[in-house]
Amino acid sequence: MILTTNNLSKSYGQQKAVNHLNLTIEKGSLTALLGPNGAGKSTTMQLLIGLTSPTTGSVSYQEQVKIGVVFQTSVLDDMLTVQENLQIRAKQYSKVSQTKVTQLIKQLGLTNFSKQKYGLLSGGQKRRVDIARALLNESDILFLDEPTTGLDIQTRSAIWTLLQHLQDEQDLTIVLTTHYLNETDKADKIYIIDQGALIAQGSAKEIKQRYANNLLTITAKTPDKFYSLLETENIPVLNKKTATVALLPATVQQAIQLLTKYQAEIQSFEFQAGTMDAAFIKLTGKEVR
Ligand code: ADP
Ligand code: MG
Image 1: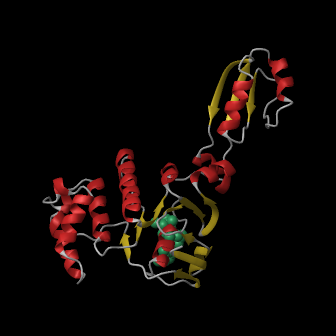
Image 2: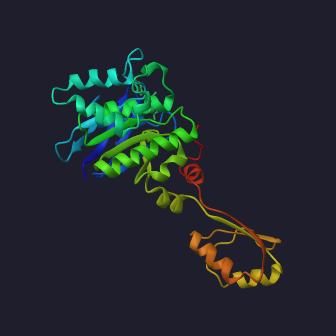
């Protein structure tokens, strides 16, 4: 455990931007704070990095850690090249050598555009440079506020891959915010926040299992016979006595077992695994965006 919060709260007037959050961030983990616009993600981030102070509650770091932050809007200079930007930033830390800049350029795949002006880079390239900048001081924990917002799907996925590499190779602890539900599959731990409060936590798998139903629809060769067979099974059935039956298997495994067991009776089937979207709708009563 590298970081915990205890009933962390922040109000702006009557508005409870963050409301009694209890978070636990494990060392070396990739944690995602997930929530719609206005949920309180950025405010939580600012509290975690000490940029604002809580109204009540607290943040505690369990060990001496160096933090790096990638803000939603970049702090780099558009008119300078990638290399110049990083070199200037490195000089601001007395202990950071210029070889660290060279090393990060290589490690984050910036070599091909290191001599280009930052302002002329694509969104994904800029994000990589922002991450390099945040890692200059040998951070133990990296905070990123919506690092993938505004990027196309492939670039978003590339940023996640990069973050996972950093996590694996350097035992970096990563905390990021996102409002993209489907990205969070790659996180070790997800905290879903709505209106400043925590409404669910766990891995994507756990959250989906808990809050999103799997749906298995089966068209039987002889529906009456199939229904009587199903009565001996311990799986919730949605619609009875129609040609196609809708079942709610708890796991993919349970669906496979059922399909295998009754394959002689089944004409066709369709399976939809519980999605993060379904879980989110169930939790918040609304869709993201
Ligand atoms: P998110 O990053 O999840 O979109 P924010 O943390 O930016 O959400 O905002 C959470 C809520 O707090 C919003 O209702 C927002 O309007 C409000 N808020 C955030 N910062 C301030 C501020 N400096 N002053 C007043 N209200 C704020
Ligand atoms: Mg925000």
